[in-house]
Length: 187
Image (cartoon, rainbow, N blue to C red):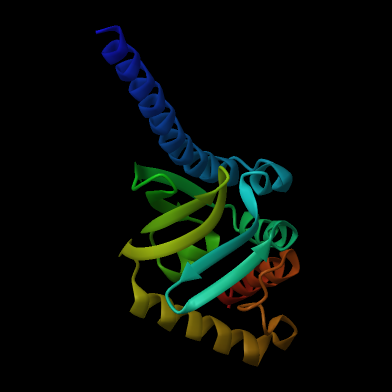
């Protein structure tokens, strides 16, 4: 009888440890967006990441080191984003399904409302190693493309010094993007 009690205790200990790790992954995913939202240091955000982060959006795959991801964070922050975690569900020991609402100056112009999307976050050694976009629940693709085309055409013709802003995901690129938006809106 004591042996059965001891085995049950061991099983419970491992079950609790397993559950804590899953909860930690969900907490890391939430903290990642909270850190981006609250403007924590780039180093704080990078500390949540594996040495290499893979970001998959449809057919596009980007690989970031912590240093190159800091450049992306600097780009993103200049648009003054707000992230809202709508839900976060553990899929298994290493993956979290998370639903996000995001808005910023760029999205507000191109989509005219916040985007809502679902991602799968994958973890290695308690660090976020992969972010894979699953789908958009709110995203007006035709509006986005039409407004982006109008904006880039206007800038190419009227402010060629800003041309290329659409693909430059550095702080300088974000500044040019914001200048392009300002120039376009004030035409």
